Image (cartoon, rainbow, N blue to C red):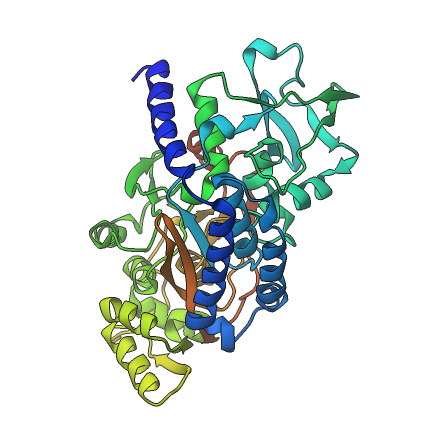
Length: 475
């Protein structure tokens, strides 16, 4: 498809959405849906009456009131969407999240003609619109401040309230940095007017000229990606040769995709004597804990894993606390009838919370062996979207000798688990944590920091692979 045809298709869809959106009272919709979100959590989440993270305790009620006070600024779909994100994101936990089928209309997304990204710990210009290169900061120019605000202040005012996973960890900046200079029609944000850059060793100010994208389709897609990041999910499972004696294994999720995960598990023993095994876990948002455990067990085998004792969480019983509700029972009836039955017993006894203990899901071990069967170097490639079962995968793998993590920090894993999707309105769904871990809880509340940090754009697979091929991993 040619570039002009792509834009025509996009704007045709936009015109249809505009007609539908014009019929909706978005201010009333925001008020109604904020209430629905608040009530869905009260009725279905363990966090409402059980374990609460400090972030949840700090934000759940005050954040709801704060969001209601901002309803008067809602006037269209983007402002409605931003307000709901403001409330849900303020909980700062990956097990409470909101998804929107409809994206921000493309003709409302503006940029100053260049993009920034984190490079070697500094925000640099990574792309400049070709026709305006003489008027804009040059490639590699370093952002110092905008409107008198330093980078911390810019990040906390523009990015943190709406999409930033946890403000206390600056290491997440590489993924979210571009959003500082992307105007996605958010009425709750004051976008910069004048920014100061370090250009060839000299400070230089630039007045930002915000405008819609009129450049290449590549830039257009990059802006859409950063604005609608929560909707972008990699779904490509793959096993590929990497270097002379290496293999690159892409696992974008542990949710569903049973055939793909089984196919990978079956092949893993074949790679034990390779030189390098790379698990590409970028954007893996988690999923089924049993699928996660199956991958680890397939590679190392129960005979070896059992000798690691209690430091390997797969050897330890898991205790969780669940919220009892009719919706949770109906949901778990489709996924795990045994858990649904326990919840139903609790409901019949008028219990609001029930505890469940799961023994390690292992085949009998006849001949334990302390010899690691994997001779290959094993590398876990992660970014800030690695949470839930992906976070557990990293935790369980890192205790195994000969495994290192590279790339960027994982998400912060709190004790919540098992989110259930609840429809707030057509096209808007809320993820609500039904359960929380009682034990084991080691390392919860923290991200996993890679032994080797990737300094560039971790979404650029070609650059990451070129960098990865030279990694020397200590055994």
